[in-house]
Image: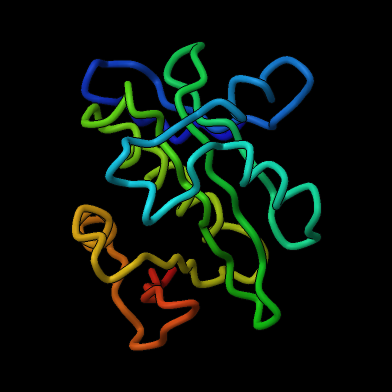
Length: 156
């Protein structure tokens, strides 16, 4: 379990946990709001499949107290940078600070790994809520683009 000590706006402890036999169905069923589907997968199942079919990504269940409320994955690029990807917070949990607490938990954990790597993520330029969130957490666009998404980086 990764616990950065962050709470959502309801006072629930947000933690990141391994996807396992007990929680994978709840993670697979995580769905964003309808307007977010042009930026992220329609269900957490897509990201789970990606992480099982790829050697790059590792999926994590996002918990608020003891309830699965989202999905996030992390990976390591060829240059050693660590990435946050596939963050999906369930529509019923939107606006409660779960996404913020997820990034606040995962980014320092990644940055503390061997070699103190930079931490990167990407987002669609039209996704202004994501841009605002990530910038407020210290991520800055690098000027690079990958698959029509802006790459942002947070230095250790």
